[in-house]
Length: 194
Image (cartoon, rainbow, N blue to C red; front, side, top):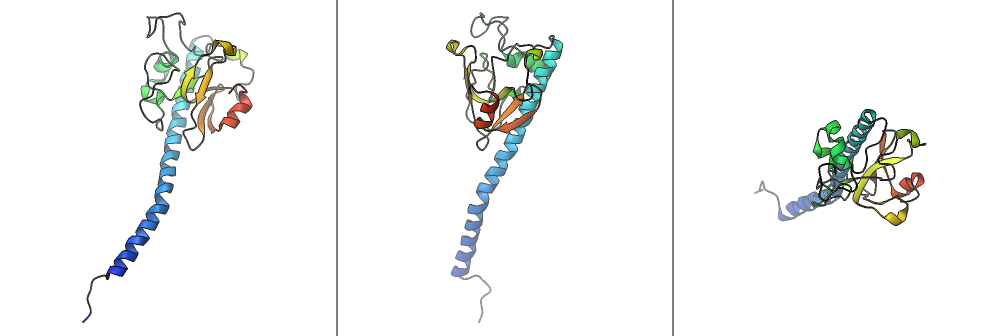
């Protein structure tokens, strides 16, 4: 008499095959999910840069300043506004200031007004006229960052701690408006101070 069920061995073999397939596919799914986050982040950086260029059109071709009044009172007098607040009317969505891959509730020092952000601005370029930037297609303005520190001993270069949170790459917005993902080595080609 023959039974219609599975034997224990057959069941264990099927479970083992499913476990092997899961072990193979889960990392693939994780990479695909991170690639989707990277694409969303790249879109955020593009929107931020487009907002900055619209700001520049309204303010005599001047890029957005890092802050409007460096002598303002922390956490902010009436005229002490970070760059994120200045371009917010052009972007209209605070969510674009947050990288979807950024973990935790860290706050960037790229603005002093408690907007959680995953992006930083390069202060030597902030508040400058577009005309003084001789190579806008290779000069980056925004990138994924962990935090920003300003160092007066660095000839006003500032220290931008870039976060390569997208499979070893960071999303970068260039002054001409294009955006792409790049590694630290690629960034250093256009900015040797990184």
